[in-house]
Image (cartoon, rainbow, N blue to C red; front, side, top):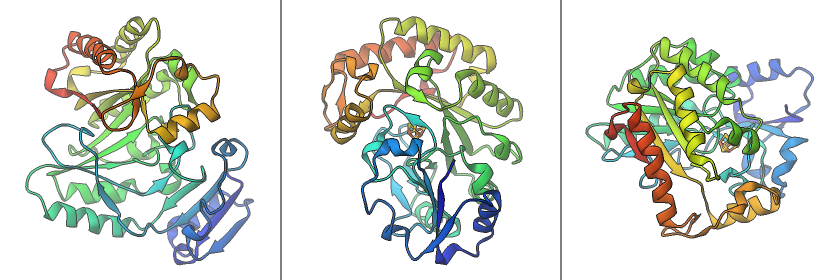
Length: 331
Ligand code: SF4
């Protein structure tokens, strides 16, 4: 998967670094002072991730926990995200990461102890439930067999039942998660789309069936689950596609015991939209009518988005999902 490993001197003796080096015994590696000195210094085209993907190991510096944008999660509760990785092994055509960093190389930050302190500092500023989301700039589960941080975060969040942790993923890599004891305030949420859409747009991600099988195993083991139907991309048979998707979800899962189902229609910053056009000029994504929206993002026109979201909400309610568990993301 990787062509080379670059390791900050400060983390070279950490057990996780040693474990990762052992897993790739034939990969060349190099020690560096700071990731920032190398990562993204020379612009690396996004699609080079197909042939040449480097792995960086280091420490996250600066702000470790950030406030999430409005309408990011369930309404009425504060939401934050923390950053323990940059970039992703998958390749979704709409991915916002293609316009975000100057490089698709994977960065893993190993200073989870410092991130934990910042999470606790954030918690101390609030009363009541506070949400923390992992995986804003990466996938939360895809590399957990390498990174090994799940037991650390399970121990942390077990101590703070009013803090909720969301692990967001498109992966079916649940092996490390299943080794943990389920915790009511740690929700694993899977982004799902109709299988045809996954095949066309979510390149290299596990199939819908593999994700649903992984979810069923987790649900049966008692892990709280959420679903993100995001991004929703319109196509001619979109209602039938989402009817079938819900039928499949219902086949594998108890939908009434999900923590939430969020829905979000495809959207881009103007920079990402430009990158999508450059990287995937023939993508079906680009066939629709897009316009600049209230927050500067490029989206379908508002009445069209509302129509789409209304249709999918109706389908969800038809499966007895309670209305307060269905929310709109970033609308
Ligand atoms: S899974 Fe998420 S982070 Fe990874 S490529 Fe797809 S959209 Fe980007």
